[in-house]
Amino acid sequence: MIRKILILGIFTLSFSCKEFSEKDKNNSENQQNIEVISTEENTASQKEDSSEEISALIKVKTPEEGAVINSPLQISGKAKGFWFFEADAPVKLLDKNDNLIAETYIQATGDWMIQDWVNFEGNLQFEITDQKSGFLVFERANPSDLKQNDRQYKIQVNFAR
Image 1 (tube, rainbow, N blue to C red):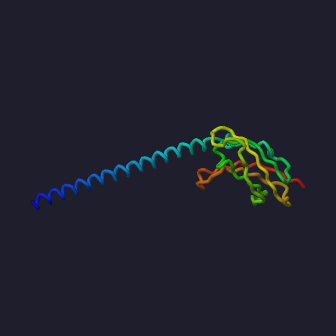
Image 2: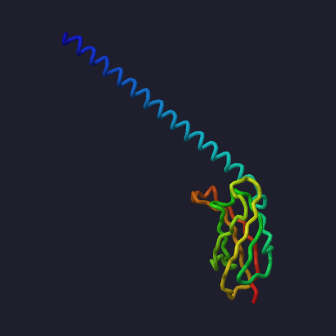
Image 3: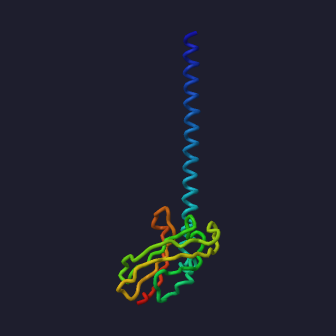
């Protein structure tokens, strides 16, 4: 009798271990599949972004390239919806030596969660420097901080005296 109970216990234990092992294996395979799919989708979207010229992602209306600017500077234009995160994207004003003068954010004026063009506006206040020119740098919002997601659009500007 004890022998039958012992055999039944061993059988039950081995069956339970096998079932647990199968579930663990299936969960592990599912997690691997999810990661692979996610990585492939991310890689595909990166290739799509990087293959586009920056001018196909953002168009600045004001100020124009080479414009004479003073503070406060009104900024406007349009960008693809994925340029923004939470409806904004950073803008920096640099001197001709790439030193930071001021920074702000442009704000999407419409639904930014689309792939199409979205209008934006911004206002940048800055102190006039002794430099004659500099750059206005529009950066794609990149909450991930991954280098491959960085994009910049840089225009040359002249400072009013």
